[in-house]
Image (cartoon, rainbow, N blue to C red; front, side, top):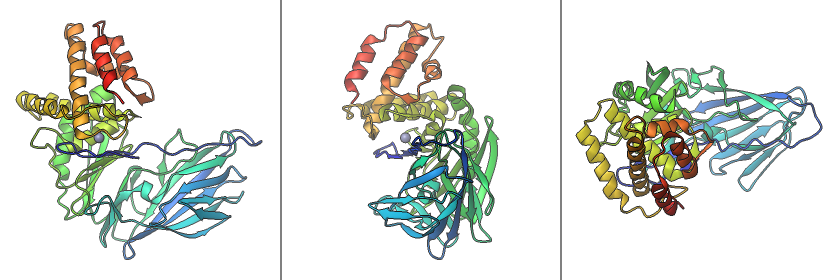
Length: 413
Ligand SMILES: [Zn+2]
C-alpha cells in the first residue's frame, strides 16, 4: 500500500497494490506441490479485537516458513503449531510439515491521523481491510509451490459480513489471487448491522455496504455508477466483480481509499464535488486501471477519467467539465515536478492537463478518429510510466509528439 497525501480538491487515496512478496527458495522437492491456507477472523466487538488464525494444510513440508510484517502495537501473539520468533516488527513462523495454525489477536481500530480512523470496530459494526488482519509475509516454499486460500469471518450472531470475496458470516469464501504463491485476503470488509444494496452494472456485480445509521447514500452511489461505470469499462475493460464499496461516517477518515476490487468512502463525501470532480469515481478508476506505476500518471489517469466518465455520461454538463479543467490548469501551476511517488493534488492536476494535451494531439493527428482512450487500450506493460504511455501513443497516431514527450520527461522525477 502506498499512502497518497493529496490536498485541496483531490482527496488523498491509497491504491492498495499487491505488495505481497511470495518468494520461493529452491530446495530439492517435487515441483508443483500445493498447500491450502485457511484464514479465519473471529470479530470480538466487546474487546475491539479479532482473533485471527492462519492455518496451513499440507501433507508434506511445502510452506517451510512465513515471515510476517506485524505492527507490534496492534498484534498480540496467541499461539502457534511449530516454532515462532517475534522481533523487530517481524513474526517468523515455521509451520509443521503436516500443517498447523498460527493464532494472533489483533486490534481493529487504526488511526490515520489524530482525528480519523481508517479501520474501526464499534459494538454494532466494523469497517477495515483484510490486510489489517492478515499481514503480508515473505515465504520460503518448495519450488513451484502454489497455494489455495479461503477466508472466513465469524461475526456476532446478528451481524452481516461483506468482503471483496463474497458475503456471509461463518462462510468459507475463496480467495483468488492466482499469481501469488502465498495467497492472502486483501480489500475492504464491512461487518455488523449493515445496510447492503446490490446491483448489476456494466457486467459487474456492485455491492454497497455500510453500517445502518451511518448516512451512507447507497442508492445514490449505485445511480452514479449506473451512469458512469459503462463509460469507464468502455476504456479500461470490465471491472473485476464483485466491485465492493464500503463506507461509514465520522470518525472514519473523510476520504476514499481503494484496494484491488473494493473501496472505502466516507459517507459524507459528495458523489460529485462543487468543482465537478468525484472522489468515488476517482477510487473506482484506480480499480479499473488495475495497475501500479509512476504515481503522477496513475493519479492523473484516475482523475482525468473520473471527469471523462462524468461528462460522457451526461452526469455533468460540458460547461462544468470545462470549468473543472480550467481549475485544474490553475492548480497545476503550483506543481513543479511529476513525482514517481506520492503525487500531490497540484501534481495530479498537472498530470491531468498533460493527459488532456496528449488527448488533443492524438485527436488532431487522427482527424478526430482516435483519442487518449485508444492510447490507454494499447497500454499492456505491468507498470504505468511515461515511456509506456508514449510508446502506446505512437501506436495510435503519426502526429509528432516529441516536444510534448520531452517536456513531460523534463518534469518527471
Ligand atoms: Zn488516487
